[in-house]
Length: 122
Image: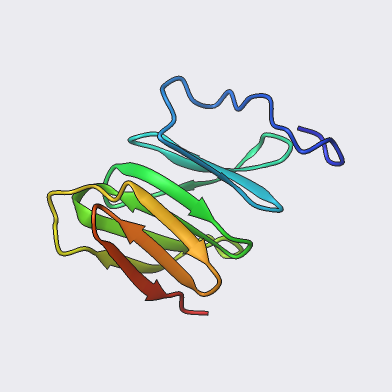
């Protein structure tokens, strides 16, 4: 997608299997499958491939962070500018996948049936 377009992404051709999550902010699109999470710029170029500790189930983004819900009750929060892992959360039920993540202000909310909230370290 070219800079200055209407903001619609028509395709990301980097995946040949079904996406389990997609999120967008002012600069990037994060897309993930069970086994792969990538960060794209609006030109469609891969700018980062995330290395997770378990299979990806969901994704959310703010302007500064990306949060991923994973199998085994794990959630990871990454800083987008430095592409570094900020924190890793382990839910009490390791048999469940984190199927919902949301970022609001300085909080990340993750859920696998019961919500857990944590402050993002700035």
